Image (cartoon, rainbow, N blue to C red; front, side, top):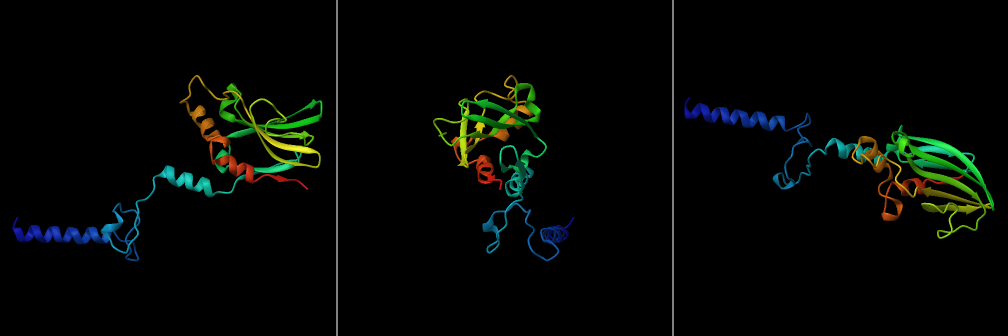
Length: 199
């Protein structure tokens, strides 16, 4: 092969490659992994991996609206909980009146309890952070109104497969509860911010 033919083939390949790097409008395709300085005036970034796309969709998707008539409020769960949780209603009598609870549990961890949190309504407005309606675990008081305290209570023990903490169900439970609300901003903020008393 002559030098002239080699140069022609290289030149032809360069032209073909430059056309393949453009979309139908002639703009550089967003999936090309080059740094911004290679094309002045263009802001091109690599395509995110599928995990980043899924997380972004979950963060911007609307929550799962749930209305609890027995508790007197509605709340939204994070969208990625869809199909992964169940509910169980209970109530019990205490000195100050009846406390209504709805346990929200992880479907894949019921063998180990699986409780993610308990939503509750207790009679009375005398409760505080240091004196919550349920003393076990941690509690967040959502509101106090009309003679009731509305709250979230978290389990005080491990509620997933602690024997195999890297199993699919254990990792899913941990994702649904991590980070805990007292360790910084989290999807618990989503839940707390969505709280609404029923009329």
